[in-house]
Length: 308
Image 1: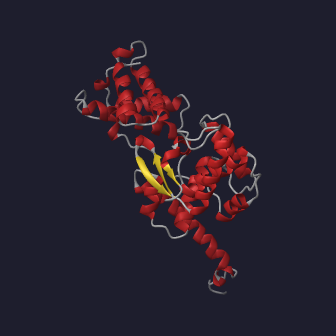
Image 2 (image 1 turned 90 degrees about the horizontal axis):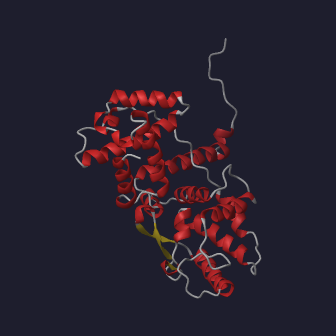
Image 3 (image 1 turned 30 degrees about the vertical axis):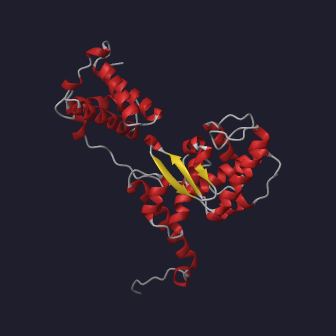
């Protein structure tokens, strides 16, 4: 790979603290760019010589290779970020990708579950002597009642979860910390889980909050499986992932009158725009409830056209 691209990837990973997944994606996209303009010599890739027209030709090439509009949009965004880095270092004078108009897409509404479905799930009885059942229920409750991400849940430190105060310190994206509040029901569930965790694992003061029976931390596919199997018991969503519980948390908060900036801070969103997508969920639900409840909305359509 080209040395400048390698330097850029180190920069976004270790200085910007972008996720390993994002770095891998950017690396693949920029490697394609380098191979298109300099297929036989990675170090011969001359980023400063590339023009807007060159990038448009590359985009046509990607389209001809079968890349869709969304994929091409993402790759151009990676190139934009790369040139911003080069400009900051004084290696190029302008960003040719900045002048490319990107296709805009209507974002689909996030999948979420209704409050009644979550109540049905969390009120269902479980075996109080089954460690995995207690672990699974506590994981689902934590994701739903705090809105934290799967990775944040896995990284939760035992010492950072204070059930007395109803607060947890969450380490989010780019290593940013935030304090997330939670209610007494979840506090009691965590306390009961901790008591059983000590008996099963034999570890009195573990580093991570959530542990497997062997005493090791959770891993992403395990959390996905736990949530998927739990949500499948009640249905109501076409997606059954941990992120659905994050969406469900946000829509429930906003539907019950929470101020949007507060929800933004709890969820650890960088910008308000990321939180505003959930207002579309609440509005669509309001419309649905109106049509089901308002007496005039229940009436059949009336033809106000002129009669012949």
